[in-house]
Length: 262
Image 1 (tube, rainbow, N blue to C red):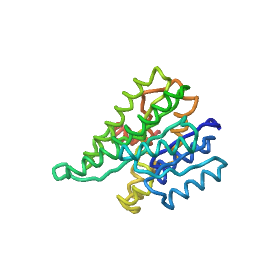
Image 2 (image 1 turned 90 degrees about the vertical axis):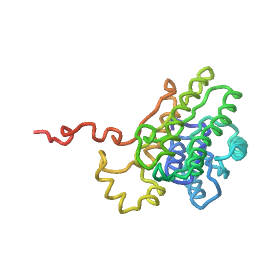
Image 3 (image 1 turned 60 degrees about the vertical axis):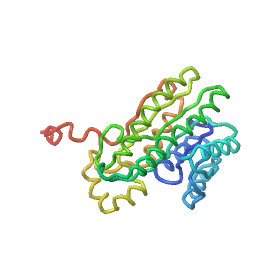
């Protein structure tokens, strides 16, 4: 119960990585407000799971891709929780496509959802933390796309590296307030969105080719968020924690990586 008594807000928390973060924060003792665009059955199910863990849970519907929506979500979360000690920023929108044919409006939409939403929410929450005093923890969910220029992902790659560097800047400016700001960069995680994009059969085939022999799990990202939100990480700020099962290292070992011990 490293987070006992803490109040957390997680955006994009109805399913996938956001849901994994919300549940793990609750398991560690935090009361959690979860945000999703609307009050979907998935969001309601996540609330029920948090409550089953004995924690308080609040559903805060709202569009965090727009500034007015972010303002409304922050205000509602504060009304429900009383304060925000921990904030996990997980809004994202991604569509793949060839660079030469990529729609300019779609490019802007991806940046708006992934990068702009992170800015608006973190600024509003940080203002509350500064005014309240006593520090706080902000965690951005970025991606190994910030490190690896995957083809057909020009907008998402740009948004994620922008998010990572933005977080470093925010961490720098919040140093005087002892607010820790860090980034988690997940690898390929087993989420409903990935199955929708690639298909379950293709994912099952690809999983065996990954360094760890499988995709990551949302709860594994959630446990990393718990660490960064806990007192164990009080001396860590402005950094990135890669949680990818070695995906960023794939191919780095060359032939030696496949040699078996004798």
